[in-house]
Every structure is written in structure tokens, then in C-alpha cells.
Length: 238
Image 1 (cartoon, rainbow, N blue to C red):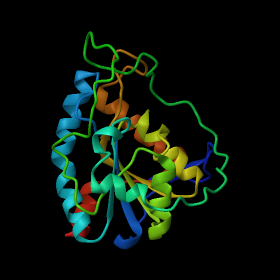
Image 2: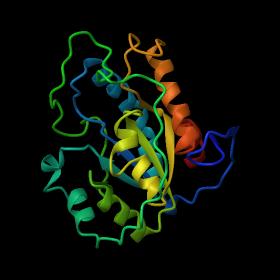
Image 3: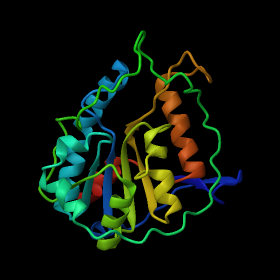
Image 4: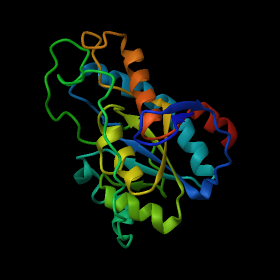
């Protein structure tokens, strides 16, 4: 689903697309699904997401879709794993010139960090990806956009399906995620039921947490990438 007519403009029309996606030309990247977050609410919601993610990953692997795990700032934990070494061994691809795409204001106020559990203060709580998420022998692990881009190019990947957290932060801003990959010409698709936002209902626009997440998803659809449901993907992979 996408409402993008002219990327970076304010002219939109919501459209639903039916496409055939070649599994061998598709990858799924998992963004910052850490073992623990500084915000207790965020940690709890990631735990729920992991239960939905593993069945999708199993079906995707069986059909030949590449899985990339991207838990930022935890590469020391994975430095001796074959999945980390495998992506480091890929020859660097020449990076294209980044497209100029305006970055517009988000529809929610996350200026205080967006945590919705009282009293939580920022600290680096994470040390690895959530242990409940299965890592396959042929998966890759990286938190570097250049490495991910090289892995996509060498395999001829045409579609990058993005899951993880948070829509208003890392999903958009990490070097391996939607904004930068889109600027490098990679077609991203957000798995909109496998994501979450950092948003506190006490902040503007004063809606529920789930409604705040939906607003950011709509923003991504308008300005950056189409979205799809993982349930639709799973139904077609089985």
C-alpha cells in the first residue's frame, strides 16, 4: 500500500498494488530488535513482535529470501559468528550518488524520546538482538549501510522488506534502513504490522500509542516507501 505519487511532494493518492516478487531478488532486514530497550514499554512491544516475526522468517528462508539482522551497536557480540563474517567478506560495492529527497516533519512529537512508560531515562540497554529471534545459517548480520548495500547488489536484490523498530527513528534514519537505502535506489517496503513507534500519548497529537504508530506508517507511505502486511507475505510464501 502506498500513497506516494511524487516522492518528496505533497501530492498523494492512496493506491493498492498487486505485484509478484521474486524471492531470490528479495531480502528482509530486521532493524534494531534489541534484547532490551531503555524504555520498558518499547522492550515489551519488541517481545510481542518477535513472536510474529519468526514464522515469517522461516517461510522466507525456505523460499530463498535473504535475511539480514541489523541490531545496531551490538556487532561486538556477533564478531565471531559466520553470519557476521560472511557479510564482511563481501567486496564493497560502489555506492551511487544519494538522491535528493526532502525530509519532512513527522506527524508525532518524539522530542522527549517518545517513551510511554513513566520514569524511564535513556541509557544503552542493548547488547544483542532479541534472543527469541532465530538466526539462520545463511543469514547475514550487519549494522552498516555500506555492507548491507553491497550484500544486496552482489545478489541482485530488488526489494528490501523492512521490519523492526522504531518507525519514527531507526526505521527511517539508520544507514541500512528506509531513507538511506531509498536514496541509494533500493526499493524498500515496510512490513507495517512488524514495527512500532517511540511515541508517548502525552505528546502531540495526543492520540493512543497505536494511533501514533499508524500516523508514522502513513508518513512513510506518503514520503518514502510502500507498505505491506506480513500476513499477506506469509500467505504467499506458504
